[in-house]
Image 1 (cartoon, one colour):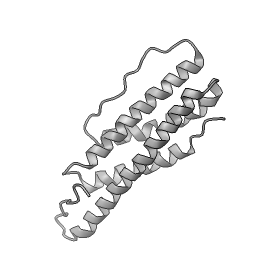
Image 2: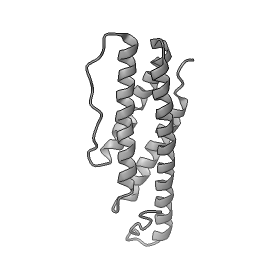
Image 3: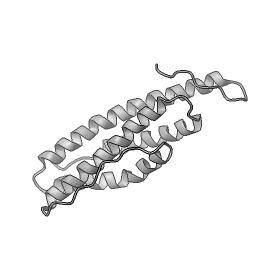
Image 4: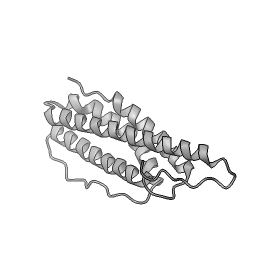
Length: 148
């Protein structure tokens, strides 16, 4: 385990907190890996879609998750973001492009979280908040289903 050492709180009893923090970090990484493989599935679904209604549930699901990603971003130093491109006129292509951009943006954020929690001095409170957000995001990602 990288960076297993977490400074104990001044009140003592650091071992249990350090253990909890490490457990939370491990779970965050596990969730992120699951989300990233889901992102790939959704990218494929978008790429192979033949009509807008197939990808609308994906778009709606991602829109609902945006606040959680923004909250995760606020807990970390600034992250690179995917660039938005001008929208093509075709509705399916426009929707697909928007979804891909959002997925790319989320992907950068997730990689950012992974790198951030690997750092040295992060408050356990921040780790706890990120853990909650990433757990929720993972659960939400599992609910997104493209229409066959």
